[in-house]
Length: 241
Figure 1 (cartoon, rainbow, N blue to C red):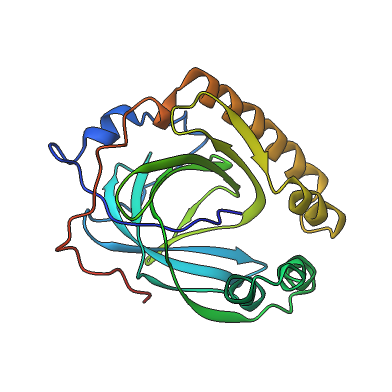
Figure 2 (cartoon, helix red, strand yellow):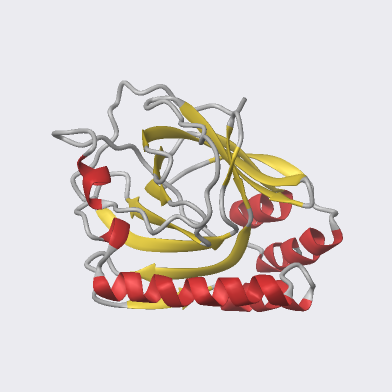
């Protein structure tokens, strides 16, 4: 699960410098017009399962071509998240966090208000892909890890994008010299609970192979230098609709 926090970002020169390097992976079977989000606008990324919202967080749009979407998120942005997760963050009680997945499978989760803290994040989303790519920054703007979040392919809505986080992640060093898997136990538990079926599992496993190859080749959105990006302090705080 994409579980760090974030700051603010703008290219020092050329707002689309990142997009020039962040080549989208090949689109698969996209048909018809695509809703393009306005640069500088707000979109809400939501995790949705069986028609119910599991989390919702507003982001600022940096760039959108329809084939790739670049968003920014930073401390101070108010969001909605499962109460088990927010209680864990407030108390450090890991037994509370462990209840999140059974609640998810049973459809009994409750949403809570949460304000993002500690880190900033730039996020890249492609078309029909089972993962997104994120770069985290500390509050001084120092680049931290790269983060590949595995999730269902995005569905664009009038207010943002809907997906569903399948919990497993790939975390890479700031210089991409090494990488490791994160939260594989939660991914396995989703399988056991029946949230991830056999067909979806195969698609996720293929996506994991593609993501490892992307990191090791320093390709796609990892090909560019994201480290010079900073947030414009005049940007308004994105808000939920």
